[in-house]
Amino acid sequence: MLNIVIFGAPGSGKGTQSDILIENYGLYHISTGDVLRDNIRRGTALGATAKGYMDAGRLIPDELMIDILADVLDANRDAAAKGVIFDGFPRTIAQAEALERMLAERGTAVTTVIGLEVEEQELIERILNRGRLTGRSDDTLETARKRLEVYHNQTSPLRDYYKERGLYHGIEGTGGIDAVAARIAEHIDAL
Ligand code: ATP
Ligand code: MG
Image (cartoon, rainbow, N blue to C red):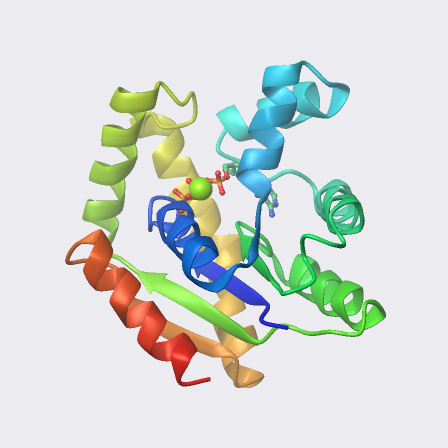
């Protein structure tokens, strides 16, 4: 099984690269942001809770997020048999520890963590551009700044967490979608 965590700041290209990876490696894609946005669209109770946090640029509380992830994993056991791309999870140390436990219970583990590295100014430009194109409600300048702050405080410590475990692999996240995809493929094919 190939379990890949795709890691990076908001706007670093996690979703874009995940789409290419599912095509090429037949993996199951779990994007926690997409799961939450789908709940908002369907008007669920979870969606109502999540929207408040998301539009404020904050993280959904760990206990809730961890339960959601376990549910998604269980509901998609067969599809996930070849492996999973975790996109947007974990975002905190507590989530990383929970992921380790959840995968161990299912007889598997994280294979590699791909960190997409992109400069802050470019991240802001990409997020604002996506906001203009899609109308995504958390892709405004104010919320983007807050999301980046949250990323630096709560999520970026995971880099060291995974480095200590020998799992972190940083990738230059600029220079075009295909160029980034080629760098990722080179790493995965060498695993
Ligand atoms: P990218 O642009 O690289 O695809 P992103 O950071 O812009 O990623 P999403 O991953 O779609 O966006 O997440 C959007 C929002 O959903 C986050 O700002 C947060 O509020 C919430 N969220 C998503 N995943 C988690 C998580 N694992 N824990 C807590 N909150 C989460
Ligand atoms: Mg995304």
